[in-house]
Length: 123
Image (tube, rainbow, N blue to C red):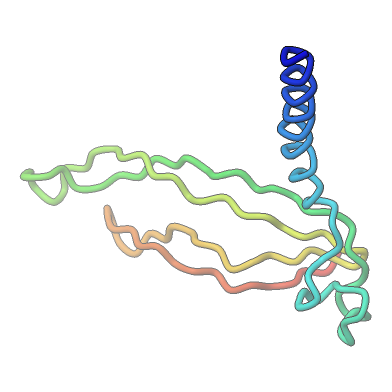
C-alpha cells in the first residue's frame, strides 16, 4: 500500500518537473511588452507595424591587433575579442535594433567599446 502511494506521488512530481521547462519556453512567442513600440495598443504602431518575430544575432568572435606587452609600440600581436550578441525584433514594416555594443578602432592597435543606439530600420 505504501509503495503504491510513493509511486503515485513520484509520478505526479515527475509530471510537474518535466512540464515546467516546456512552459518556460513559451516566452519567445508571447505578445510584446506594453512599452514596446510594436505593441498592438501603442499609438506609434503605424510607424513600427505589427510584431512578426524575434531574430537572435549571435555573439561574434573577432581578432584584433594590439601592442605586445613589454615590447615596442609598433610590434603588434593578435588578440581575440567577443562582441556580444543581441535580439532584433522584426515587424511588418521593418526591424527594431536594441542598444548594443560594438568594437571601434580608434588608432593603430587601439580599440574601444562603443554603445550603438536603439534604432528602427524600414524594410
